[in-house]
Amino acid sequence: MKKAQISFNMIILLILALTVLVLVLLFVTGNLSKLFSGIESASPSEEETNIKLCSIKCTQAKADPSTCLAVWNNVTLADGTKCTDTIVNCECP
Image 1: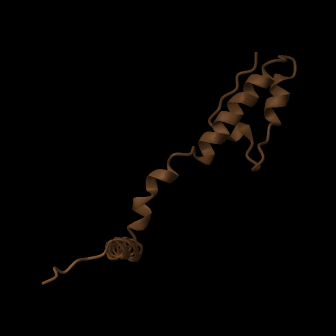
Image 2 (image 1 turned 180 degrees about the vertical axis):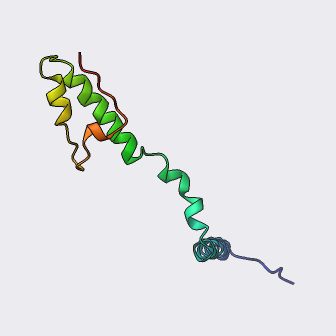
């Protein structure tokens, strides 16, 4: 008598079906975003990026003390944020 055997293709199909079922359940229950939340936090926030850019602009403005304050007061980033509105305090010499 021949034993019942499960083919390799059937095992792969079952694993794939279970993976899809788990992903669907995570999506329906709202837990899918928690699964991938670590990926999102890997990049710096917009505020952190603006602070870094304004720090760089402050260093550049300090290169010429005679125009430092005028340059610093007119620095605007690409998104419209003025560096004077950030927490970066540029003290001109």
